[in-house]
Structure formats: C-alpha cells, structure tokens
Length: 380
Ligand SMILES: *Cc1c(COP(=O)(O)O)cnc(C)c1O
Picture 1 (tube, rainbow, N blue to C red):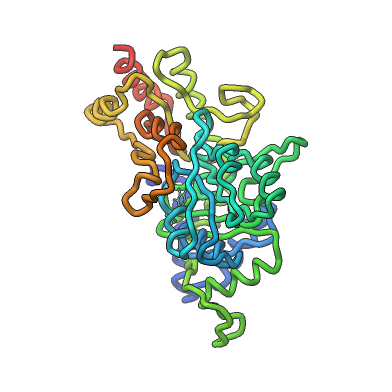
Picture 2: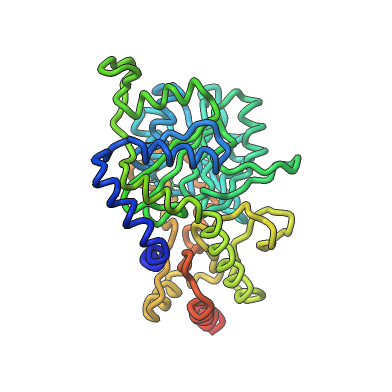
C-alpha cells in the first residue's frame, strides 16, 4: 500500500545525519529540533500556532480539552472515518453524534450536520477524509450561526488547499478554531514512529493547549489544569524537518498517480473514481490542490468489492477497505438513539469502497498492472 523504504532512500543522507546529531545532542524530548519543526510547520500552513504532541489521537483529545468541552456536550462528526475521532469524544465523556457522509466526496454531509444540531451541541469535527478538504465554507457558516467550535481532523489532509467561495486558498487545518494532525508513518507527512500536532490561530487556546500537553503545567511544577503527557520527540521532529520541504512534491506525486488511475478507469462500468468538488466537476482537475490523496478510493457498484479484494491479493496487489464498518455500528459506539435510515450513504459505502496502493513512489508500470488487473476483473 505504501513504499516508505523507497521514499527514505531519497532523503537517507539527510535523515541519517540529523538523527545522529540528535542522538549526540542528548536533547531527546522537546528541545531545538522540535521547536524548529514547529516554526517551519507554522510557516508552511500559515497558521499562528503549531503545538507538537505524541500522535494524532492525542491531538484531537487535547484540542477538545483545550476548548473546555464538558461531559454532556454533544460533538458531531462523520460516521465514515477512522475510529480515533469518535474515540476521544467518548473518552472525554462527551456525547458523540455521528452523521452520514456525502456519497461523492465521502466527507461529512452538511445537511446531516444541520439536522443533528441541538442546544447541547458544542462542536463539529469535520475529517478531511482520504485527503480531500471537507466543505469548510458551509461548515464554518453553520458553526457561526449556532455558536459551535470547529475542530478539523487533518490527519489525512495535510498540505491540501481549500479554496473558499471568495477564491482565497487556505491550507486545511488553518480554517477551523483548532485542528489536529497525525505524523503516523503512512500519513502524507509521516515520521518514523508516532507523532502528531495541534494547530490554531487563537493565542489563548494555544497557550492553554501547550500546558495541557505538558501535565497541565504553565509554570514548572504548578499544575493549573488536568493535563496529559503528549510530546513529540526530537528524533521524529528532525525526520519531519527533512520531509516537510518535500511535502508539496509528495502530494503532487500522489495526485499524479491518482490522475493516472482515474484516466485508466474512465468509462469502466461499475467503477466510480474519487473526485473533489473542485470546479472541474467529477474529475481531478490539473490545477486543483484540494485533494492530497492520502487514499485513492474507488466505489465498486456491482457487489463484487470483496471478490475484487481477493483477486487483487491473489495477484500480489495490496489493497485496503477503509472503512469496513460504520462507526455507529461498532460495538463500542452503538447507541439506541441512532436510526439506520440516517446512515444510508455510509451503510452503502462500507460495502463498495476499496483503496488501491497510494504513495509517492508509484511508477507507470505499477499503475498499469494495478489498473489492468482491476479492469479485467470488473469487466469479466
Ligand atoms: C490516523 C488518523 C488519526 C489518528 O492518528 P494517530 O497518530 O494514529 O493517533 C485520527 N484521525 C484520522 C482521520 C486518521 O486517519
């Protein structure tokens, strides 16, 4: 699915040397490398504050703690996403409210969010799923009208540009009140272990969050709030510093591979290729950078998705089903308030989606082999 080795070979010299330097420096936790990375990421995203932490799940949790969300508060998020989002909502004693997604772009359905808002609703968590920016104009408007926080889960979307209705481009993660990301190795900006970060343009919130990730300390050994221990270590930061300048190129390589996939699948019955809602309509336009293709995900319409998975595996092609079970149907998150009729899109997508290999090192030959194998099977 991903070729981390091939990507590493190209930056090996720099990574190896800077990792050795960190080891020599003995500044393993926080320290200058983490600080530099924070600054460089702030510049890249054009966001005022980046607060590095231990992983993307912590980043979400800490963001919610920082906003002062309290047990009983309702937080709306997508039914079709990785469990981390709903997990932290539940862990904090908040009430998760899962809503359906859009069948075209797989992101949270704004109409469904609208319907789910109650007087207890405090926040919306859009996920830039598979690397495509969620419809942030509509979400921010809705949040403003109902006085809600917006927490962007940017774990899959780092580097994507969201183009607002007025034409301005903003990086995902710099739009909501606060955002989280993950540097898990297979993410678009991945380190060689666990890592994550929180972003915000709000000075007070940034200050609060910096304390929370460090045991609630704002002054050494004065614990003003209940915090956590969530830090990015310097070895991961130095690896991320080597990769950040490549991120736009990495994302361009992913988009390029996605275009080649989609071109090959053009006109093939029973396959729906992924798309943004960029001005080009139902395709990936040449100039659009709203999608960074964390995953390249097809819908297989004729009920043969599972057979296709097996066929690809038999032919030595890795693939994945993200995600096979809607969150509202997961044992841990079942809730009698949920009504199956409200999740028709997610219930359908979990049966149809398949993600093909997607990374920065895909070459023409691999894409040809993968697309031919898929098409042979689907048109058989
Ligand atoms: C990967 C991911 C996370 C969690 O990140 P970790 O660093 O693995 O904790 C959260 N949300 C989404 C959408 C993700 O894809």
